[in-house]
Length: 237
Figure 1 (cartoon, rainbow, N blue to C red):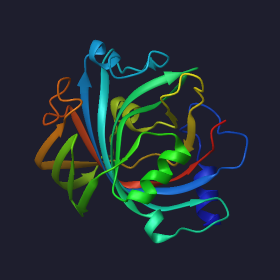
Figure 2 (cartoon, one colour):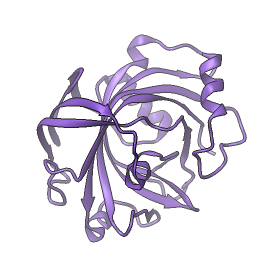
Figure 3 (cartoon, one colour):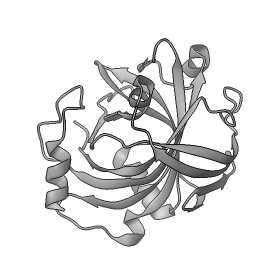
Figure 4 (cartoon, rainbow, N blue to C red):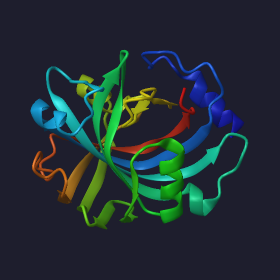
């Protein structure tokens, strides 16, 4: 683990600001990640994001993304992972914001597989975690709750060796903003750059009850797959 952490920390030339000047608090792995990206109208996005957060845009366009992955090896510094608590499937819906020139993400929804880890994650991070029925095989995701019904079936292709500006803008994000106007300090994270692969969507059925009026989730503008990243995170400043 020490060598893994050294490797993560030593690679930082891709960041647009310095890492926090204090010890990291969390380690976790985000594995087998599928990104689905959608353009959204600014007027619709304003209905979903708190006024104290500034939108971030790419060449004048705004985006939200469905991100499905598996959490592994979650642990607090100087502890060790416990399998039930440290490994679970997650699916979130996020958009792109910034504050004080720090581009990050704001979560509209986070669905996680296991009840107790979901409750703990919500309490410790302040992020909008909710428990859901999430299942997956290597290339298939299924989620079913009152507000969401999602089925994703995909295959992974070759590595994308020619990443464009939009690819990097959507994925290289190093802080997580919370829905708290009194405390706007983001959760800071760090990892090596994402390795992105082409993928093919064989079947896509997404119904977010709360957000269907704003987007056609079955028509993503762009999508990626990644084997994943090893992540360190800090407690809130």
